Amino acid sequence: MKFLIKESQFEKIVFRYLDSVDLELIDGSNTYEFHGTPVMSDTMRDYQSSRIIVVFKVDMDCYINSDFAQDICDVFSLTPGESLDVIGKWIENKLGITLSGVYSDFGAD
Image: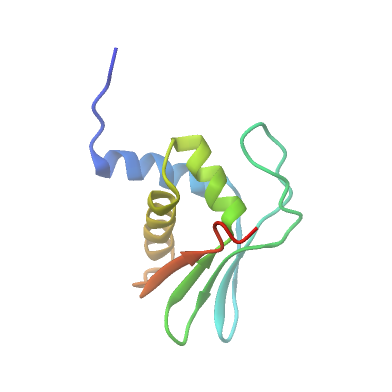
């Protein structure tokens, strides 16, 4: 059986998932930084309290760690671009800001 899910409903599901990941927000003078706490499960890697997301306040560009974005791809069967888009929308919603761009280090390995 197949289910049709509206895009807004899908985003709500991903947003709830991202809320449950337990990222710590640090509001610095030049950046907003989301740091991961150690998470051990079948779907998320252990981030060892590293920077996962950085929003640069000067231009509102957003960098997302590719390992974190790839985990979202894997959990929700998204492409890297779709993953970055939905994480970017979650950040905008969470911080009440508008991002000028979202990028990652996909393929830099």
